[in-house]
Image (cartoon, rainbow, N blue to C red; front, top):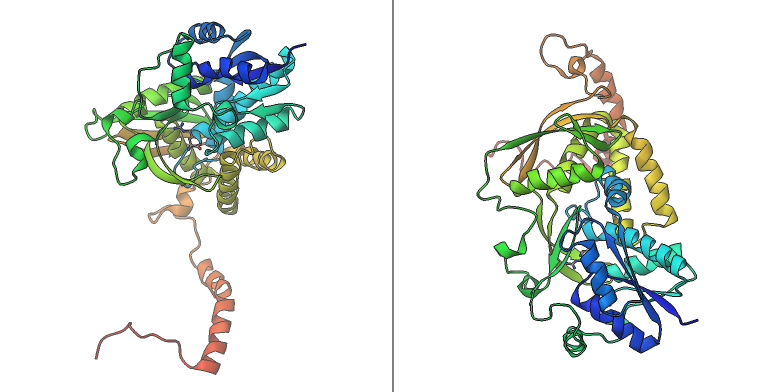
Length: 411
Ligand code: ARG
């Protein structure tokens, strides 16, 4: 039987050319698999037909939007997943779900190999191949752009020579990856990190410098997951889509960073994730009132480790699963409502309310109604400071009084 290769297909120039390129280089039949994670653009049927027209023996399109929102975006929200405190993992969380669908297709169609369109310089090749190896250890991976010398110029030349039904003239200076969770833009003049982004870089967000009137949204969470917007019940996918529109109209969620790739290169990327960033602001604040102090402090470390694991392509790894278990358990009481004002590029929390809140008005108030016994603070401080005080006394015994220079009234 002829060998079969499943190709992660986007419908763009590179992967369209890769169909014939792989077939010629390997003698295998190519099965194109496109996974819809809410990237928008052309209809799935158009994409499927193009793959067939470019020579794929089978083409298959998976609508994975709800699965992506529920099983990839919501865990990212629960983990407040911001790589380098800024990037909400847009591309990093789409690679594992695409890999899962590629492995399933490979098994279904009897393929031995999975191919993807990544270069050898980025994180995505790692994410795809580590995920594929984990889910389908019997499968081989190839990357035509990286392994079969398929350059951009060769792709254009190949497409023209074979009359492939794909636009080769439209020159977009940017490399863009987008899904419902957000959008990533790199290359072109953005590679000079002194250059500011121009207006044409953005698509999910309007210019925050000229915002419409402030928009106030009320997000209801149950155990860390947003379930209703202004009282209307929504699925995770609908929630993200709604907030992308409303927060996007206010220019919320624009990010410009130079990030540390796993492969050791620093790269500049512009992101837009209006819904994700608005939800994260709300989720973090709800955690502030519902997590116990030590749990909250510890969770910050877990969140960061989770985020790095996911960025580094370890979605299906044992440690990542262990951290998921911690994070899920921590969300037990993260339920309630957050009122957010979206305006001029910012999502600002204005109100919070929860049946499971740990905030106690009677303990916190400085007005009448105070139930906190302030006299108990003295003994607490004596004991809390005792070890530092004891060691300072030793210091004074041996080296004299503490250095207070720079303080006090000048003589
Ligand atoms: N740097 C981001 C990451 O590694 C995005 C990668 C894809 N970006 C792109 N513009 N094609 O997760």
